[in-house]
Image (cartoon, rainbow, N blue to C red; front, side, top):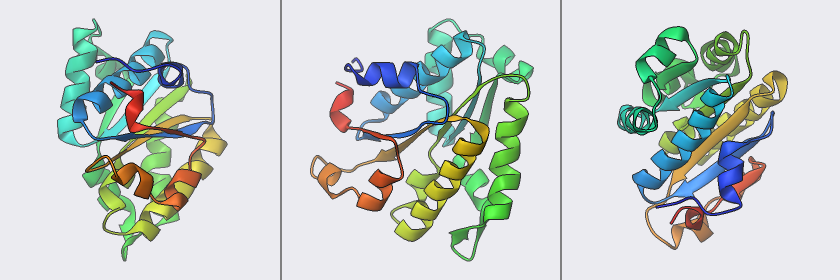
Length: 189
């Protein structure tokens, strides 16, 4: 398995203030991409905040450890932080929509704390948990992320799981347009 050019560069060297999305069908491709994104950032002394499902978080931790990173030490030092996506999402959702103030308190403060002395890369899959239940709520969450990314100069990588090959063509336009780049399923082969 490998990440195809030019997308490998996007994962490894995202621009500050850039928000991009990967569409994926297999978890192993997602884990590889997030581990590349996080690993290069860690290697450059950047902070990494992963807001993922526990399963994806554990797989990313294993991939980073397999690449030689001392994951537990990085977490203890605050350079790598993991937040459970469902738990984090629940902390700022109100009446089926993201609450801006709570989002800034919950997610904004995590980003701010991580980046107190360094650049921040963030990976989030809360929108992936949300979009099938409520497209409007997912779009609003992407808008809140875009505001935070611009204000804090964060590099943000998010991902959406697609159930089949045809789903990429049906991926909602509003969600596509919320991102600077859409990394296609075919970026990982």
